[in-house]
Image (cartoon, rainbow, N blue to C red):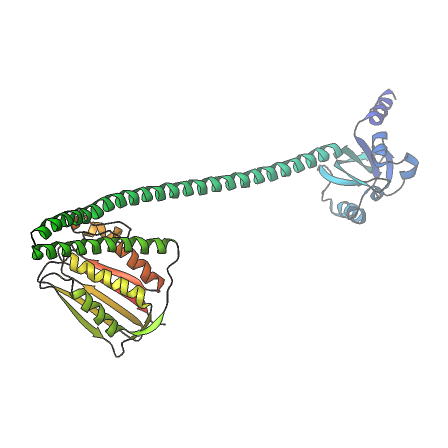
Length: 395
């Protein structure tokens, strides 16, 4: 008897809930912990089906679970712990771990359920889950911020690198300009000064042949300086975006013949400019002013970098799809390793020597042709001449 009292005392004071039911699933007893968990008084539940403590879908399925076990002996809950939901008197639910055991007592079977409330554990798990989600979201945001910062830093690095590269290019251009200007201006100006001084001398002697010789030199050198200044002005207008393209239809043959006639006057001794046109038509739709400046620049270079007793070919071709103007010489050519810099401003190949020039001409030509929607193609080899083609797609 003392042992039975001890057992009841243990059950009544147990922290976990303990429920016993008969083979029909009716509640026989609930210890105080179980009653407190479900919010009932003992007389409210005693004799009722255990399903009263279950939410759906277990509520509707419980009796079938009992019948299946009693008919088949297959254990799905008994002896196996599992997590389930309990339904309180106030219709709220709570999670708990259920362990069911089967007991033979006074020639009948009863089932004992041991209930361990998991509300605090689940709340802690939910809190941990939410904290983990928040942490992951924070990490995601920080990662995105970090990636954005890295992207911005890389962008800033690239911009700084480009700025340094542009600054380096600008410094190179300044160096080329100073070198070119000091040489190209000083040489003709010195010649002009010398010729002017000699003219005074020859005027006193009435030596008109010598006077005319030196006035011719002055004109030539002034023309050279004018050409340099014109290149500077053309470049300035291009950089400022002030160069306007004025398309019109004109005869490319008459246009070319006029240029050749003018350029032949400044050609070297026995240099001959040979012109040929190919095509069923000679009408083109381009800017004659920009094209004239470009063509004169190319022919001037051919004259300048070719020797005496040579031919310069000037060809035009008008097909159904494009217009092509080609200038070919047999001059000093351009070293292969320097051709990549050919169209840079103030660039001059190392083999030009003392031949005057600003290094702006081809840069201006390329930009003029681009404004008209065309392209410039160059083929050259050192000491084997140069061929430059201006190609335009017909509208």
